[in-house]
Length: 255
Ligand SMILES: [Zn+2]
Image (tube, rainbow, N blue to C red):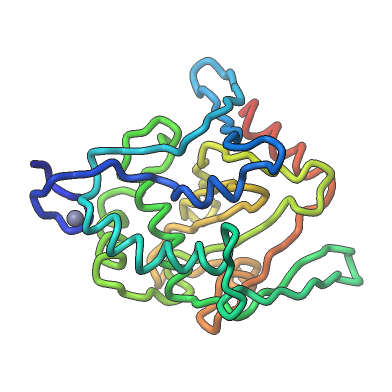
């Protein structure tokens, strides 16, 4: 018996995934079944290697079955899967996205509505939290610290819906660049901002999820608050310009 990290009870722990399976299955190329690429790099040797893997990352030391399946699974993951990933998307709960182009600088973005803010936010925070509590190597840069780990644990366990300004989440995409970075999951990276806030960047199949690890009273810059996931169910996805994906890859691979 070990202590489950979510309910904090001594229980039999199960093999829990860090990134849910369906996010991986969304990554599978049609003609290349069951394979996606995971890019890792080694901070010490400065070497990187794309690795083909066929199954997700698991950790058998973090969650009991009730927490993994019932709390995180049925409450949050099911929503993400049904609305965005996989084959049988339910159109009633799927985001409705409109594309825009800024005439001043040519930047392209999509504004998506019809998002269940609470469920989506908690789902994404659960990815961040799992990445922090696991010892799996791929997630070694994610370390929320005791205070934020505990706050997010409570949020997930007690189904507290944080405001849009607490742990804001921003999304950018590589969908419009020549290399869309499809079929790629990268090692999440920590980014330290000038205002002292830590951020974590996850790339999962063309979409970059940027998490800001702040306290609600810690103000975020306007460019962040304008485009984060909103309590009214709206979210802006900025499409990065061609060439940005190469800068991005260089940055994560050569560090
Ligand atoms: Zn538990």
